[in-house]
Length: 403
Image 1 (cartoon, rainbow, N blue to C red):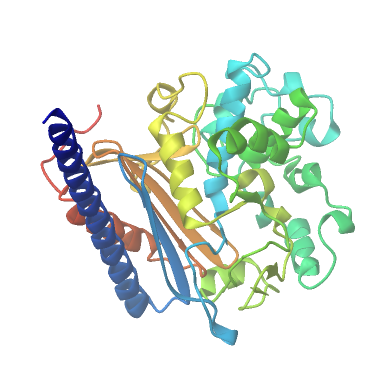
Image 2: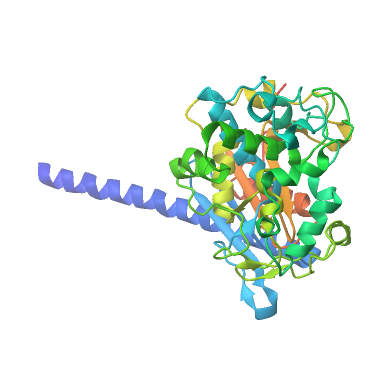
């Protein structure tokens, strides 16, 4: 009799567990359908070539989808595992690496970067060179008045790289990206204003390299990507396995980067050298790896030591109100009336645009990547987030904003 009871109990447990698993699978399938339908509707409306999206759920499950084409000219459909460039989202990786070095005592938030980089002619010529700290660079308060890719020497190097020599083959190294900024008048004293610039994160990457003796790509890989198992995130380079074809049709960006063709590469290969971005971005992702990284970084689990407090205490006090967000070390923030504090970062690179956002009140992270600079990407991302919340029954109640 006891044996029969054991068999009955085991059978009942299997039935219950199987029912729960089936329900979870059905929920994930419904979420996948909702994401794909939402992304397909956005593609029909905005007419971009292709896109990928992914959601990390509270339990860690990842759902990813793709629509459209990775290579329209050859009819190659976009897959969820296609890689796209993340643009300025790479700043999150550089910021995380720098903060990890602060934890190890190799960098200090409020010490002058001149302690590490000073004495080099390219650094000493920069605006506010003696006063810039790591904290200033992390939140774009250095006073550097423009981005290096806005200068003619770097624009010319980018033009020459189109189906030509890489920047390094032209003699343009990472410090050379910053040389054209030397001698400029600062936009404001360090720490007393805000001006977004890739130059700030190039400085952070150079400081990290100086104190470790390692390339920033190796620092990011060993301190962040390998511990988190994010092997689909890779440094940007001209040739990259699984890279979707980029498209640069938006007139403003075509004017900003003259000489870069509208179809700015082919499957697995860029027409230009992406090293122009480097510390200011510099990484390729698939949607799932982007969502997983955003979940770890914005959710506070990316490093071995606590760092989330910096997301609030180190926010810049000088971001203009019309920017629509606040800026902290490697993140943007915004308060939503229903969802509370949102942590996110967006970015573009020539022919790509992306955004990843963490909804702390729902423990949900959503990423979208498009193989074209589609200026409606934030609206598309919001639709995906709302579709995910609706599919999960998490659209309400409202959460209070973080003070």
